[in-house]
Amino acid sequence: MRDNKNFKPFTYKVDIKNEEISNPDNHIIRKLSSMKGQYMDEKAYEEMIKKEDCILYEVYEKFAPEVEGELLQGMSIVHPGKVGNEYFMTKGHFHQILDTAEFYYCVKGHGYMMMENPEGDWAAEELLPNTVLYVPGRWAHRSINIKSDEDLVTIFAYPANAGHDYATIETKGFRKLVIEENGKPEIIDNPKWK
Ligand code: PAN
Ligand code: ZN
Image 1 (cartoon, rainbow, N blue to C red):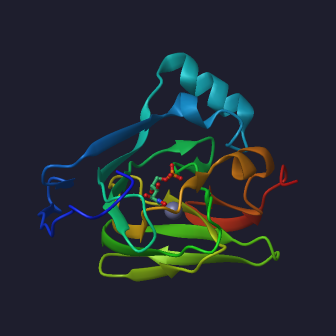
Image 2: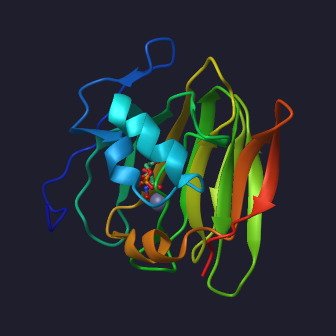
């Protein structure tokens, strides 16, 4: 949808227990194979994918016209698990229109949002139920599930015309990673960061 002249108000239900929103316009399923080269431990990645191309995370979207001023919304679900000692996480991205922000509301689970901007700053904010996270414009963002037995579920909204730049993160990675060390999450430098 490229214009919003005939777009009408709407409501939808968020089902936290079943991790669904009503009548989604899109359901994205991201598997291990879509994350090649993104995890630190490449050997662990290869061994895992040989066994099963498992689902890492899912996104339900509610569309809005892709014009300035509209908001695209949805639910993001990162499943529990690790590749080596690095937790399951989303690909992460900058918005194509860099100066566009995003609102996140965590409804279930425990995790981190890893963020960084082109100016060289980074930030990791903890996500717990009822935490609201504001990702300002210019900040790349990636959700990371640090629980071993529960999904990390968030509701998000961002400008519908923002677009996604995945390529920058795919090539450079994030400056920091969240891994498990002695049973606890630790933030470390990404040895492969360019
Ligand atoms: C979210 C993300 C969602 C999945 O809707 O798209 O959590 O993460 P990736 O897009 O990095 O695979 C968002 O930030 N949209 O802009
Ligand atoms: Zn985003």
